[in-house]
Amino acid sequence: MNNMNNMNNIYNKSLNIKNQQDLLEQQELINKEMIKQTNNYKYKKYLLISSVGDESYHKKCEWNYQDKNYDFFLVYYEPHKNVKKSYYKKNSDFYLHLYGKKMKHSYHVFQLDLIAKYDYIFVLDNDIKISGKDISRLFTLATKLNANLLAPSAKIQNTNHEDVISIVKFYYENYKNVKGNFWKLQKILPVNLINTYNEILKYSSWVQMLQLGPIKDKYIKCTNFVEDGRCIMKRQILDKFRVNLNLMKQFNSGIVFDSVVANYSNFNKIFICDYIYYEHMVPYRNKEEDWKEAKRLLNYIVKYKIFKRKFIELWPNVIKIKIFNLKDYNKHKNDCDYLDHYMNLIKE
Image (cartoon, rainbow, N blue to C red; front, side, top):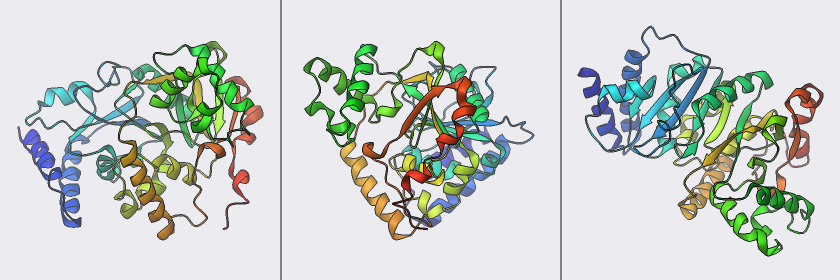
């Protein structure tokens, strides 16, 4: 009972965060709670983190299945009070009840000592449909590739997959005509592909994320950017972000976070696994709000010189991609460092 009273105190506190002192007090409550939850705990190598509600996919997709190779940290955000401990125990290894958006949750979770126990951390949006078993496979692959960042590919629901592939081919064939901007492709796209193209943009803004090849061929994409909310990060990359509390505090949604960790990775060893894919089940929302936040964050990053070198904004026209079979990785691994691509933009 004391444990759940403490959880309610944490949630109530999260409803009334007004200043730095409130944040400090909230973190102290969370730290005490996590000391209890992690007492004598035998950590695994990997950690999955997700902010979830009642309609999230964590239960349907069995993210907490018995033989998983990762620990699961669940942050429950619904306003229900007195959530039973049995709910948390059934669906996670660690848990918190917090109000607010996911990066406000991450501000507190990323400060926890337990983060340092893991090799890789997967911050996964709750509207992503991917099985727990595939999450385990992705973690294993991240270690095999020594990835800085790794994501599954995106399969677009309610579309003909051949049409999706046709759109990707058309984009690269007409790359110069749209100046590399996938978001402007509709202007020259054949009419029979426009509906599929619009469906793609509802669920993924980034062409490199799209699932392309036969699953049996086990293709890996080497790229310079993977989308937030479906990204496994090497813990040392996340450490570069989480050490800066003032920077973390600026984030609400995940907008720009993906660009930040790509920059921290120096665009090196960033992969998309083509043969393990997810479906984004809820269309993008609040785009105007996200763009305003992005502008504010980019101004903050430049103003406070978060990076010693020039911060590289990632737009469709600077996305690079190379595709190869997993079995051929050793032949291609030196091709997966894109920092040289930006040397004309970067000043040390």
